[in-house]
Length: 300
Figure 1 (cartoon, rainbow, N blue to C red):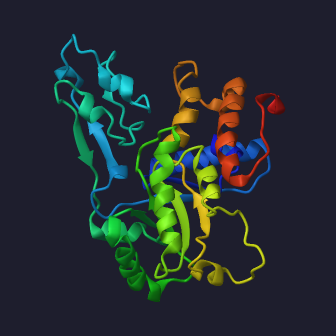
Figure 2: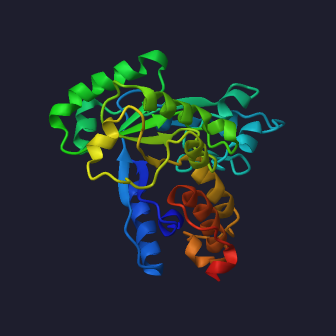
């Protein structure tokens, strides 16, 4: 709901019926508040091991009573609860991996979900490619993938550049890898056609970093031919920025302060918290959308 109100164009979620239903419920709730354009709902599937498709798992009964619980402290999603012996709350865990190295007893396991090819093919209707930087081989990998897809492309594809997957960090350094990836592609003469979208380590500094490199633009100027812009070796048209862990973190801080109660709780039932969360979301989305600075008092 919060990011729909903030004006995002697309919401990415897991290929799970319950998750997709929850996303649509949030969008519907936002559209009851104000008339706006409905964002796309995109589901992500993996074709192999992937950091985005893993969960932490451990048996809380195996934890020593005197453990300092570092896993609980480092979890950005508040997905680990030991007071009531819940262990990992699967619905909250998004696989950042921060708990794995801090467990002093090495009790936390990584569980990766891999679908078979038949199931994956049923889920795929349009392919957007998420690509980690693989060094010097990145360009050849992209071109090989594009050559396979090209006969079946009905529109321009989107290359998502994963700089530092699953970080959610707030500093300028966290976003450097994804920006550096975009810079490398910008000067590559043999890059395949397609929009570029930054991801992995993206945060409030990403759009500003792109502007400093001369890579960020929100509209096409003086050109009616999108393909000519995309094919230009001197400019990479950045089609968007994907915020995952960082977007969850800044709004999650507000959500975690919602009063505990029996049964489901919705942020729209807590107007002050909704205003606070929306202000944070607008501050992030606004770096890409070029919103004017917004203060919480503007919503009251």
